[in-house]
Image (cartoon, rainbow, N blue to C red):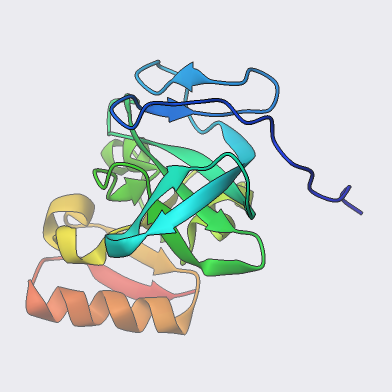
Length: 171
């Protein structure tokens, strides 16, 4: 059984700076090379699928979002009791596990950042912004295995909107 979540230490952060907070280190710049760091911190969700760090409030999980080369470009956050809804810090992250898109076949598409965070699958990726992805561009001509029928259906709808040569399966 996991210990209960506790308040993270609040660290003042200017909105123009991009920081990823951890209770252990207080704050570290997001432009480092660290990959997939997980933490719990208070957030303030905002309109448009964005969030900002908060001094107090509901604790949320947060994961760094990297580009295909491992550079940190954003952070995604969600509340533990509502993993199907998430927010981005900068709005630039489209995919969790983007570095895997360069080398992995087949790709395991995961429904939520929370499920991706807990996945031990080395081929796992999670689409964060469906309106900003083009399936042919990110998946290319390879097999994509979705973690749910609902996700497979969503990917197929997006695929029909923007056709590409890949196969979608549930499994």
